[in-house]
Image 1 (tube, rainbow, N blue to C red):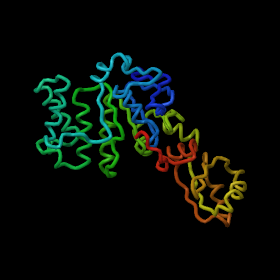
Image 2: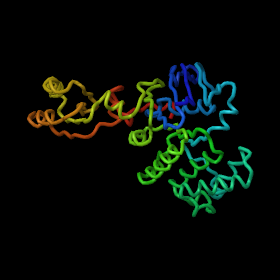
Image 3: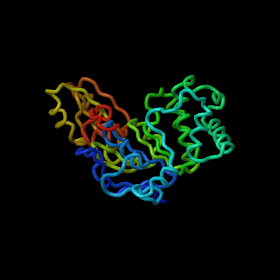
Image 4: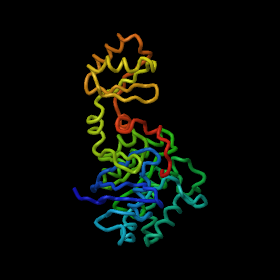
Length: 314
């Protein structure tokens, strides 16, 4: 597969603070590449360097075969960017937002109108084309922001936390549109802290924490490698916790403590472990569920994505 983005020992400093710590990754044409991590992990800084908004501090970064330090103009012309916040012009209509943005890329008025109408139809916004942006819902604004990023037919679409703040129905609608775009061959780069979003959309991903890459690979492979098929969440009094862990180690030694909960990672069949827990009188409550990417992050860092309080870079 063709490599469209490649980072080698990529670094970013803000004064003396290292926000991105000498990371390496490759993104291939036609895939959805995820950058997963909590607020403060360095996700937004990485994509901002990819679309040449922030200069790199060290290492190498190439996009579509061009160096970001020497050819940012070329790179920007071939990328679509969907920022975290909707920065639409509230006083313009839905269609006018697309037409004005098309003008930045030298697209003719006729060509821009044709593409705008196609995008409005694709994103289910045709009936809102002549309404002012301030009059449409948050989910529609997000779809319009994505449409705007596609107006010049980019080779890569960068989406920075594309569904933050949306209700579940709007989020899933956007996921479906993104799947269709990927199926048409568009390369997607997605930053998110939503585990289900990463599992639903990403072919490959990196998990970042404090500016470093902790792990990379396909979502299901990472879950299988670090966690297994099932997770049992066990609540037990702190005084009995370590005695329980010693007692259960003949069934699994793969576990993590987080707050008042013990997370037992079960590679295949949980039956024997559940039977043991049912016989262990000190266990207060437990539940069995499928494992997910948050469990991988918990195993690697000792904390959940939603529990990480660092916020130097969203």
